[in-house]
Image (cartoon, rainbow, N blue to C red):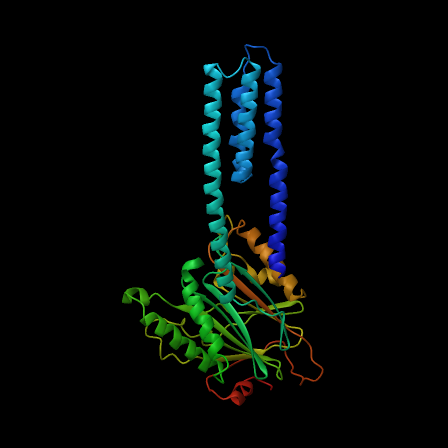
Amino acid sequence: MGRLQSCAAGLRRSWQSSHALLLLPIALIVVITVADLRAPDDIHLGPALVIAPALTPSFAGPRSTALVGALAVAAQVAIALFHGGLSSANHIVQIVTLVVLSVIVVVYSAVRERRRAQLAQVRTVAEAAQHVLMWPLPEHIGLLRIASMYLAAEDEAQIGGDLYAATRCEGEVRVLIGDVRGKGLSAIGEAALLLSAFRESAHRHVTLPDLAAALEQSVQRYAADLEPAEEAGERFATALLIEIPDEDPVTRMTSSGHPPPLLLSPGHAVTVPSLHPSPPLGVPGAGGTEHTLDVFSFEPGDTLLLYTDGVVEARDAQGRFYPLAERVAQWTDAAPEALMHRIRRDLLAHAGGHLGDDAAMIALHRTPTVQRRHHHGVLRHGSARGSAQAQRTSELPGL
């Protein structure tokens, strides 16, 4: 509803602006007509009336353009009558020329208006489809506050090959962030597949390694249906799966070739690499890969920053990559929404206002709870290959 009201308000402002600008060609017709009538007989300003209908299509529709054209023709007829009537061949030629030009600009304005309406309809449908594909993340889910950022490489697209999703499972939150090969609209098909597979499989599989294996199978089935086979071999995606339980101040992570997250605590920003990352999903020959589970502490008040390579690979005019870890180390106390705003503004300034690749980012902030077991240490990092939930927390030193 808010989006529709905003569009309606924009249309009203556009209508008011175009009608205000319509006074310009009308005033021009009046000024030229009066000047011609008051000028000496050897000075003819009537041909300048052509400026008014030629100018109008730049800001008005076909009806307004036709109105201005009719007024210009009427003014030309009045000038001809004032200077001796319509018997002069010169006046007849000027009137006919003005009529022909007015018809041409009206037709041009009508064609342009029709194409503009078609483009607006296509854009509306595309935006709706993109919103269906990439659901907006909730501001709160479980014990987490969430903020996200998405910058598509293509100007007319709101999403591209980067993707993210979050879902609430029993006693925990699962998050996916990924990056399929390619960018912009050409990569949306693979992104849609991975998002759909995650939303369906996240509630079926007990462990993240099992979930990662299910996503791997989905990507490989999709690639197997593609022709030719050479193209299928190029269909792959990096992915990072995150699982945050309510009862334990930890995060479980499975990485498939994706950039490592950043863990932000007051005054500190630490990169959390996967100890044994798997290859990207869909890489030929990697179907039997054993996905590894990494576990690290995630205390109340900490923020986990997930991102795609489009963020850290953004270059400035000198070809330098965006120093994400260095920048966010200055903003560790910022709320998730403020953090996303600062990174977005700083990233675009670094890249000169335009990114060469899609870029996505999620900030997950763990809110304090009343009762929680106390765990010592800022960062504890472990790895587990088993599928049992109990084994995952036992891998943490000191737990």
